[in-house]
Image 1 (tube, rainbow, N blue to C red):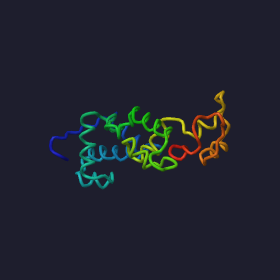
Image 2: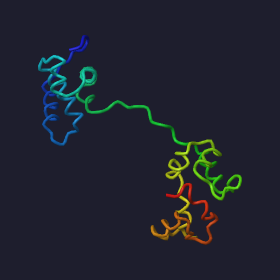
Image 3: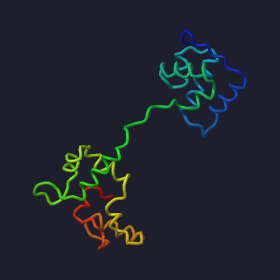
Image 4: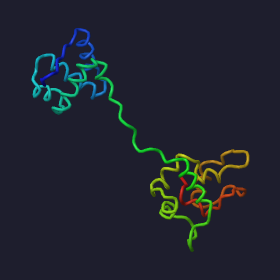
Length: 181
């Protein structure tokens, strides 16, 4: 065992760890962690603990140290990690949506994803993918009547192909290509 790591497994801790290893519905990561501590408590060296748990040396040391500080409960939860990429700011979303309603630059007949990304200073992926979950798609907007009733999935798929479902909609069918789902 690594220097500075002292593990004392009480009878209650051993019972809980053995219950985890015998539970067929337990998450395999929890089973491997419990095996590390049980093998360590049995006096096995690091190499034997690695063999029994099928974890790397660093992982064995990590779980021994976590158990020393937090007990069995520390083995059953993962440490929190910082979140992934931040969401697209609302101002950027609004800018893309406003551009979608305007005429495309030059002699273009419709906005492409690349043109929209370049004009709004966001990535192509944000234009095509990131906005689709933030706002209703244009096909959804076109397929609703004035009372907000949905005309159905078939009509929505027709709208995403360029057909209009609602004649009162302010959005022309040529603008569907960028953000339609």
